[in-house]
Image (cartoon, rainbow, N blue to C red; front, top):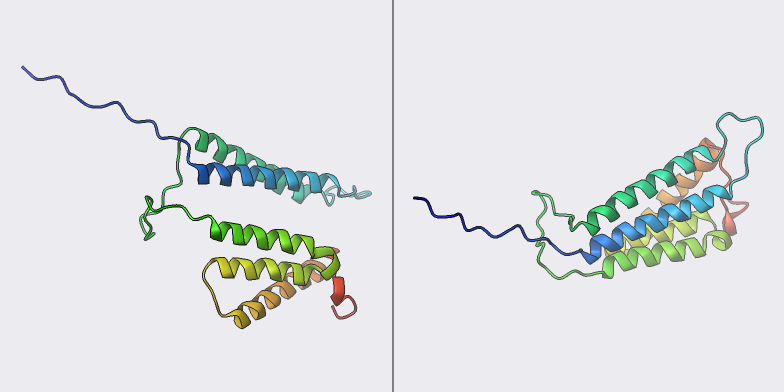
Length: 171
């Protein structure tokens, strides 16, 4: 006679706060993108107007955020990959995401007065700092070069109108 198998029922994991915050942040980003897309004027006599690609990106961001939110509420967790050397039980530090978010907010705030290049360079600089880079001169140089190349590609290659800010006349 075999004994009944005494196994505990699978434990339901609680909601992961970092995963929930990421999902809500992506949903908020998608909503902001959708609002910004609605502010773009329609093109005249254009089959594919200037709203199409921002609309696709904003809807995709909203869908992705909704999927992450459903997963987070179901108790799914973002597990590190096998190749990652991380400890999933280590305490969560929100300092680096806060640095990146702060850099993006600051870059967004100075985008109109200072221009796209300097605002975007602040964003790149904050990301490099959050990832542990401390060679400030190199970080500033790379952030400015990448932002400048991005500006030139968008304005010259795609004919987009980005704010030049204080660099008007130079760029």
